Length: 355
Ligand SMILES: NC(=O)c1ccc[n+]([C@@H]2O[C@H](COP(=O)([O-])OP(=O)(O)OC[C@H]3O[C@@H](n4cnc5c(N)ncnc54)[C@H](OP(=O)(O)O)[C@@H]3O)[C@@H](O)[C@H]2O)c1
Ligand SMILES: [Zn+2]
Image 1: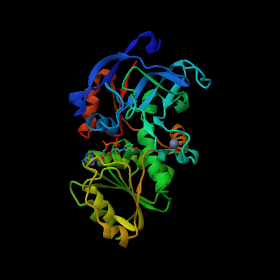
Image 2: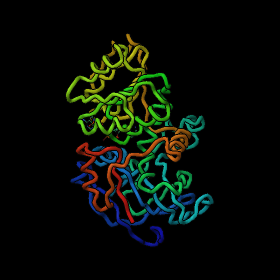
Image 3: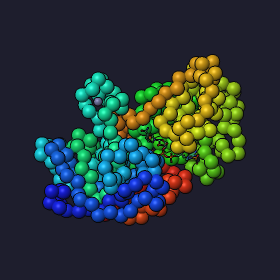
Image 4: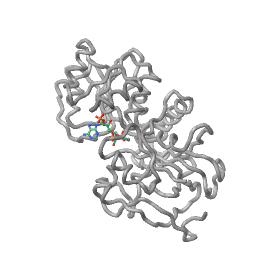
């Protein structure tokens, strides 16, 4: 094992141009990444896919720094090499990558609000990621994986888990006596949101929307009290009935599109509507009268602060939260993995693995 300076190459699942991942992605032979001062080279064992990977390949051309590019922000693997100045990690350590890079110096970073850093960059979105044999990252972005947690499970934690944790814990500050609605609950973010609301904050009533009976059964097993199939009924009306015409205290909506106004209509007086995504469209209609008459707080939340990442990991490692792995595929079978995400077939995260 050596770095790019030695001319070694590796396999990556990359692209030269943006569009449908099934058209753009290819198996590439590329130079191994360089290992700079403070960096650690990770021999990638598992990379979880998120909708973010789809968005990046499809349309985030203003984020991508270089071509060919490969995504993959959710990475677990083994330390293969350490750069100069790295003392915390040794070759062979089992590690998980926090994909968020911040400047460490701005007013937000200094206050522990790193998620607001204007220079925030994400591995796999702005910088080449882990859909490859090796990934070079700052050693400070690594966490140890406990012996009883496998690489696949660990890889499904960072992006989906910290996004849901940031939204429900850091931003919405969910409380045990509250009623919570999760719109779009079967994906990576949604399955964390369900468990955070139920297993960590013990919310009173947890309601979630989904699109099939099979997904509804899955969500009930995961801990949702009431599942609404929005293809059969208007979910805002059903929330209204389920809450005795009071509405929910918190709604977490990462779907956007036509679910946005319905989510507003589902809110109680003074409720908090929190978003971290817009899978079905970023420019939905809105209803300002509901915002001011009901006194709603509309909260935006992206990745979480570093402290939040630590908090989340504790709950995962002690079993309070179980990462939901939909299916695993060999890295070279990436097309089938992306297809499951594109077709909305997955429960939790699909994971690409390597020997
Ligand atoms: N800001 C951040 O830092 C950040 C980080 C991670 C994720 N995100 C965003 O959060 C969202 C969720 O991401 P994810 O990776 O968990 O997976 P996802 O593929 O976006 O999950 C989709 C969920 O939304 C539901 N859905 C409803 N309408 C949909 C539509 N028209 N198209 C697709 N899905 C629809 C699906 O469930 P049903 O079929 O059951 O309705 C599914 O449960 C994405 O928009 C993602 O970009 C943001
Ligand atoms: Zn900063």
